[in-house]
Length: 340
Image (cartoon, rainbow, N blue to C red; front, side, top):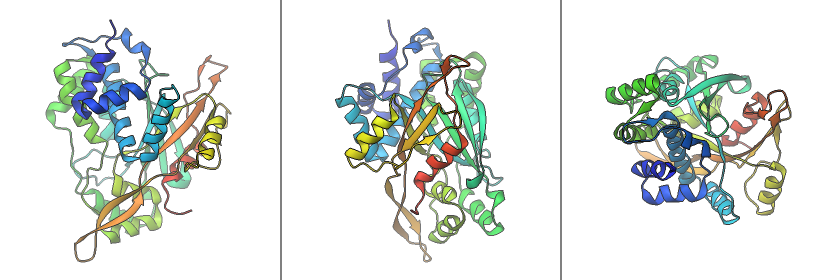
């Protein structure tokens, strides 16, 4: 008997029953999950990896109206979205408050769930290194995590001081109990249902903004040197996009243009020619910033977006090409820029 209904019960414990039912109707779930254990005493890490991805998927479509509309239109056409990967940003810096530095705050989460950093990508124009985390139990089926790690040390001293000031108030959502469960999960590849129910909402909260409200002056300073860091200042470690894996990207683009959706006007093609990507432009969100008098003022800033990807089979391996491409990634990251 399939454990998929149990998966969505776990998801419901974090996002609520209506959201879990929406996800079940709209997002494809890997059939291979049923090859892994599920019981009250032993849930395999692959199930928890899928549950986390589903919860974060829902967080993004809740924040991006164009994304939710796209997903629901796919369902109306008889198709579930295939969640290829989600992406978020972090900061390679010595001052991050209570959080571990940069991606280390997330390797402690992702590695116990079976993810491995399989490849890095130099996004030098953006002062970023990309890290691709792939789930090793079902690599083609469970969504990857693409971590864009920003390097403030490559920019001005004034910029670096501002980064320190912004991140100093960061709080760690994980406590010793959560870390203990993750350590056991890493060593045994299983946890109990009680532990999974306790852990999942905390893991979801880790993909959010952990630092306090930013001042207008600091935001402008960051924006003057890095759009990526300015985005992190207001959005933190939230998913900045999620990606639907589609069979025919050109057909998707043509349909989205016909519908007058905010889609990028070109397709990024990898050096290999096997990975093609494009995306909606980011939505606009309202965030409070502190003015010179310490009062909160609403500002319109870039939020998150939805990406589309087509992957072809690598003839050398006979498997789907799950890699990314540095040029592609830099083009996609720029979808959250305020200019242009």
